Amino acid sequence: MSREKQRQIVKTYREKIIQEIEELYASSFDQLSHLDIGDSYLAKLTQLVLTSKEAALKTLRRTIEDPIITKAPHQNNQSINNP
Image 1 (cartoon, rainbow, N blue to C red):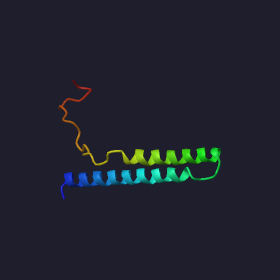
Image 2: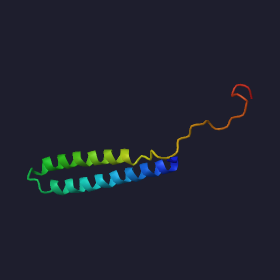
Image 3: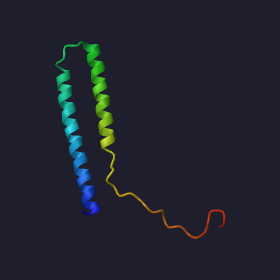
Image 4: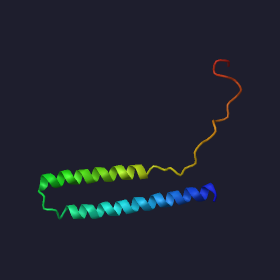
């Protein structure tokens, strides 16, 4: 399988997971609104869930399928100390 095809598969899968996480957290926030735990606990729990969501999505939104540079840029035969 070509590298381009592999990168596309990784990107598609990563985007699918992001969508599933968005849906999971939307459902979770709906459920939170129905809990009878008082405003203070509700605010704390909501903040924890929101922080968890942001951390999960931040990590998954990193583009890992971009090509990696494996060679140093072309350099002249001169060293820094000998111009």
